[in-house]
Image (cartoon, rainbow, N blue to C red; front, side, top):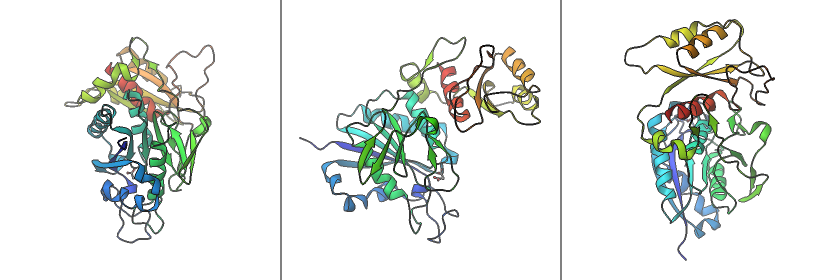
Length: 330
Ligand code: SIN
């Protein structure tokens, strides 16, 4: 039987970063080393890799703080093409840590492929004295080729996270990601994957007044072919907040698409400053869809029976922004 292939797509990040001084873990440039060079040394230490075919392709070479829609589209199209190729069993994506959870979540919402899609990253550049990227990439390959892998997940520091729950939780530590209350999907230990739970399928979210669900069948075509998504902005409720920022966002700006969605990062259990709420009402009256998330890193909003507006979503603000933009596309 032909060996099955794993496609490795490089997008840059610290995993491909280089510093001029080897011990420098912060003053480096992300997205410098080609993905083929990240992959090459691994086969020498992992004999099981000879059971598989590996193809590495560079889709982008950027610092993921600068992630953009064009790169997401290219990535989604490459993953979809791989899903239609009977030789490809799985896709691994190397990515920066800063927006990793957004790319993973976006892909989980738009992909229909049953092949696993495994994102990985590093907190230290490839030029570090002790880089974490090679182990993370090797672990990601082990997860991608594991028979129980499914859906979109993230592998970092020996832990497998689902696209739904993963979030970057630390600025500097090598173990920077958390699955919050849900806990991780699995551990990777010496190439062996120990599963704790199945990867949940993508959440379906409905925008009130919009009949379409956010789900792969509803939106993926439009998400990867539309040049500009509906404009959804995020605002935060905080001590001293008022509606000035919302009113500013509602003003037309020549050459800029109007805001059609707003995600409010509320305090605690999704509460919103009394001085901000009237401006959100004005936004709603003008047809802007408003969703309510929370600034808290853990938990989801638990509404009482009387809390009806703005509707709460069980997503972090950055993930809610993506889900709302996709919902408004459909
Ligand atoms: C990036 O997100 O591309 C830079 C930071 C990192 O990968 O840790």
